[in-house]
Length: 97
Length: 430
Ligand SMILES: Cc1cc2nc3c(=O)[nH]c(=O)nc-3n(C[C@H](O)[C@H](O)[C@H](O)COP(=O)(O)OP(=O)(O)OC[C@H]3O[C@@H](n4cnc5c(N)ncnc54)[C@H](O)[C@@H]3O)c2cc1C
Ligand code: SF4
Image (cartoon, rainbow over all chains, first blue to last red; front, side, top):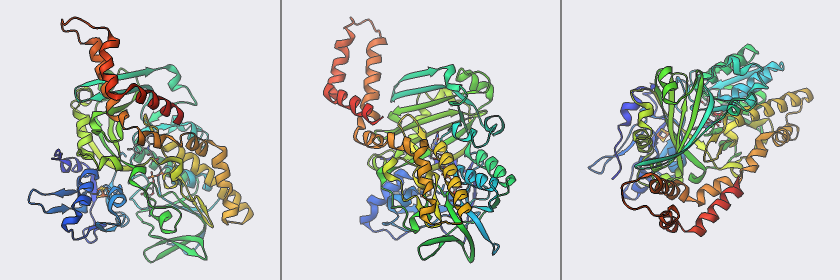
């Protein structure tokens, strides 16, 4: 069992300009054989955006993405259909860094 | 965008990009820097410590003028197990001496300051545009493409950071392996300056760099860091992807475990979260350096893999700055000759080799392998240290046994031969 951390609460202090018209990361339709890959993203995404719900369904939302590229490195050629930077001006904006 | 051809286009407004643009503009070249975020620095995060030797010579007076946080005069390394902490605490007036001084920084703030310097020197800064592709004609990079816009230049400098998609697109670098990359997660926590100075026993304006190794990263290669800033603390973890994904503690949970550790929690008590950030750290070292030079193109900074994870610290900022300086010099020289071929730009590599960038990368070449092949560093050795301390200091009325005898079982658990081998391997890689 993975320890639960409320990352959303932390992301809430960050500044985001979400591009509602264009998802910069797209997860492809997953089969049972893809769950191992998905689990690596659950562990590694610093924003905790890849979630496996108790009923076995998966959830991913690009809105809180910190654009680190971790999921691209782990699964860019497997379960991710698309990984791009958000279009110019969109995405996270660090005020301190 | 304009139709004019520039002397140089710099992609990316981090430390590397802003410094390269500043130097080339100062030399009279027509330079444009393009950043995908709303301002240079807006996408960037770092751990926290800049060695200023590299930049003081580029911008004299940098240390006095730039928005730096605290001068680091105290270094701590702490090994953690779930219920204990064993630390080294080094303080020396030599740490802050000019030439070897280092400062905690907030990179988004610093990058903006540097971009302003570049602009004052005459560089044009365009923010909010993401470069999607490079213009390549007959194997020569001739400029950049964003949407329907194209912009041409004699040389394009890729300063687009650790995830350099552009270098990958034109075949200059291979895809990363999870063992070459770590993910960093950080919280910036606000605390009043007086509280920071009291908790970290530092005088006015001075700061602490603190590293943690052990239980929070749950056996994964990696560790925690803490840097004190003027009115905040940067607290984070770094964990190598290949081992992180084999464990069962997520990166955000590692940071939470560090925050809650009884040796860390009092340091940040009553602090307020200002920012939460994530970024990758390249830690493959010398062996992951991509192709650095092509016709009309150079790669600098993190984009070129110039980053070292030395276990006790990540160093990339001074390498980004120094590599940008080498690249700028190469472009200035090439402009004088009007030749922007890879042969003409090859002086970039020569300069990197003469300076500290490639020398240091070579010196520490075997270090990534040492960390990879010595998982005990992150798990058993912190426990050994804690167990030894327990034998020494926990007095509970039971008859004492000699320390040597008490520690033996712990040493045997690891194997004395293994310990000696690890020490030798570690020293050999440094
Ligand atoms: C957790 C962590 C801790 C660290 N700790 C330290 C430390 O204590 N000391 C140290 O010296 N180093 C440290 N480092 C390393 C250091 O932060 C980096 O080496 C350094 O910041 C790299 O600078 P850069 O300019 O090369 O890249 P970046 O700062 O990443 O800049 C790249 C820029 O390019 C832009 N960009 C990318 N693609 C495009 C595109 N297509 N179009 C337009 N713009 C684009 C980005 O938005 C960004 O602004 C740490 C790193 C991390 C992640
Ligand atoms: S890029 Fe980083 S923050 Fe964004 S979804 Fe992927 S792993 Fe998570």
